[in-house]
Image 1 (cartoon, rainbow, N blue to C red):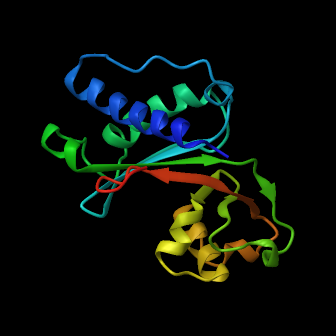
Image 2 (image 1 turned 135 degrees about the vertical axis):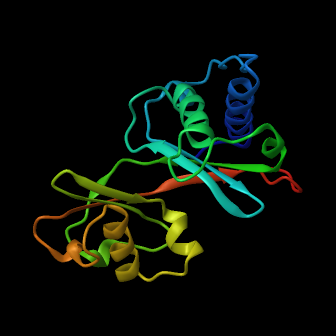
Length: 185
């Protein structure tokens, strides 16, 4: 469980990473001596603007310490998500930052193991893969089958490929927290 103070630090770090790249000042908070921030775990940074998705990029698995991952993924979500143009200065104050810290990936042997709201999905088939975070199925009010189909679609695969023996389905949970601009974190 990520403590409130740790959440606040990571959200501030993500916002600082975006603004420092945008304005070129390079000022980032120093990493506290905290074991959580040194752990190599998968994490995503999602940006919303006026309630709409504005960027979302992450590492599926831990490849860097969480501190570095949040810096890199906040900047990537703001400036490198191919679905959107780079964040501009007049947008920064309107951005709401959400962080998802991922658990270990677990193989799914039966789709009855998948719980909407608890699990995110990663589906792979050959060189193609698609990942949807746990909150996506809840936001769209999907059932398990629709969640599987949409994850296949995200991978650029046929919607029902999840039922094929060639597909590998992994599930994971995530600790999700965000800036609540009008409320406390």
